[in-house]
Image 1 (spheres, rainbow, N blue to C red):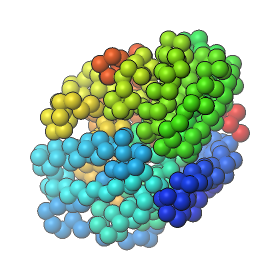
Image 2: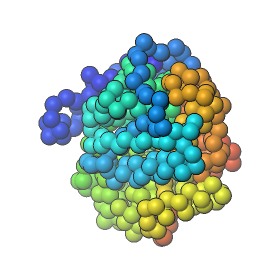
Image 3: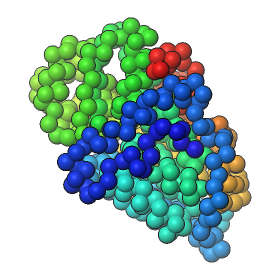
Image 4: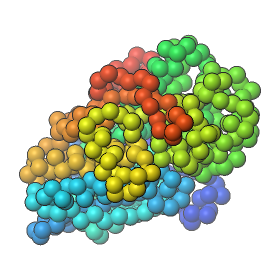
Length: 435
């Protein structure tokens, strides 16, 4: 169950899409309530995935025939489409591969796709449709934390399963969500450790104006305070923003040692183009991004972002047999020029984790899958991952990457072994500063 105090559907903007865009900060207004309970979440560990949040909701999933339905829910339109279309493609690749190898418990997967349209309320509506109308056994998708938080009450009320494939700000766990992207201690904290090791003494924070960047930056500021790093400035802009002249000039004037970037979607295109226009480079003021992967590099233009850093758990260049097979299969299906990326890999992996959990349970029923999932492992392209039974997150190897001239990202540092998920940062004394 979601920790009390975090945004729920009623906290998100209502009305038409155009009216929401006219007042883009409305989504962020729910955030202070969320942040006010961060200290409680850290001290009490919040509502973890092993708590009983089951409901009496009856499932309409029908497995009597030769097929079982699952859903994909991604932004195929709007500002997040630049990132999410390829996630949908990787989900389909996994489904096709599983079907070709015999399916799940002898049943072929019937994939039903929906468009979240980059709007949290649409994600909630489409989740309801997939669960109650299409009667899917699981849903794979979501990207922004706003979309996840809008969907979470739907999945909990219906006692359905969502596999969420993107890194996020932590401070959450639910029996109804499997988090196959990184939580804070598997991405943001390693990135901060890397900058500290490189001698960075000051940072400027730039992010999109919604839940993930603001909560992530609260964590970053607590880390910085405990480690003697000065925060020179902090700016937010609505999703989809394209005017970064003021922010970039403030960044340049700050003289910060580095920029920590939590922008999402196509705003990154405008930010990095303006960054280069004012003469800022990776050598002068490096940027560490946590939402730019190989797919976004092409949209931004490698000439605008070469040499900059990213923090993820997977890159196309990861040298494992499983990854070579994944990259080859993805390019064969979608085109030789199509790169793979961390969220795509996590989404692909999530379908196989669901399959293995179902097979371990010998059942498609949600309670059975929930009970069986803990300890389930998969030899993923990023390396072997395992579901943590306590919080429904998975083990991840942290990787810092550098964007190079060929548009690919190459690992310049990694954690050496998978990191156990710690979404509430229980293992970090400096996290007390969040209170």
